[in-house]
Figure 1 (cartoon, rainbow, N blue to C red):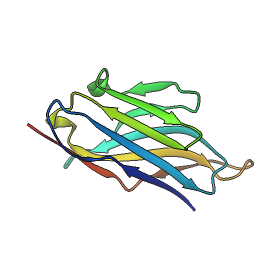
Figure 2: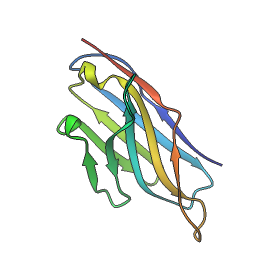
Figure 3: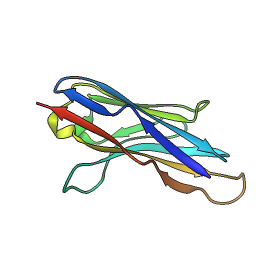
Length: 121
């Protein structure tokens, strides 16, 4: 069984910072891409940032220059450092990862349970 466990969400004032973490656990052979998505009430889930196993990153335009995604492959953990937070960043943030459980076979896409981020004005 593979699980993604997020932590680090909370309530912060506009202009503040939060750091989200997501640790993968279970029977894992390898992890390729890891990413953070978010979903605000009434909106579709959207990609916030992604990082490959080699460290290449990409960001949504709305967070470029404010958010930084990183990963620690030894800890099977992905991070999202969020600075200069705005009220429009308020959403549930979900961790996502492409994981292979065995050397042979396909990888599958997994989601965490989500963590709430609320930015007050």
